[in-house]
Length: 193
Ligand SMILES: C[S@@+](CC[C@H](N)C(=O)[O-])C[C@H]1O[C@@H](n2cnc3c(N)ncnc32)[C@H](O)[C@@H]1O
Image (cartoon, rainbow, N blue to C red; front, side, top):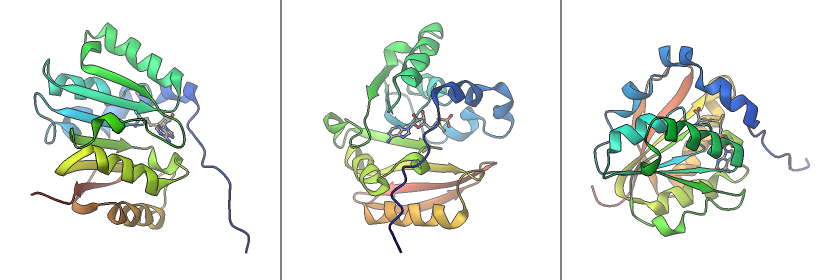
């Protein structure tokens, strides 16, 4: 059978506004989800932040001494995110990085990241192995990646395959998290405990 070479669907920029609707907090409350993992002074990597549904909470949690590195392939997502951050007085804590399909362009963060999040993005990526490898390289050994996919777009079997790919790129499953309308695991970068 011929290999399926279709590219995954990337969330169009205008849909970014819908991901910000306050109603979403009822099922996916950023404070509840992130507070157990993020501390003052941390460097956090957020892959595929869109317009920043989780970013402002991350920026508040890392405080003035922390940094949130937001990496997206769409300039319009990043510019809307930065506009929202500026309005909230949080833009100094955020570094926006324009990625492309081949690279997250975060080589400068090797083993500098304390926590990473990839929420509703991995199913949009053509080369998942490459993405997990790049995230793994940036995390400090023993640090966590919160990996979550929407149940509306990703079947449990596909999610399981993505987790296997992550495991082949230096991660182990630390925990399964229960977040509504999503499939979520906490992955730990293997290495120091
Ligand atoms: C469905 S949105 C999710 C946004 C946000 N994480 C949320 O949960 O509201 C997916 C985001 O991932 C970005 N994205 C897609 N492929 C990417 C890639 N290869 N590298 C970085 N970001 C990517 C899209 O541009 C979009 O902003």
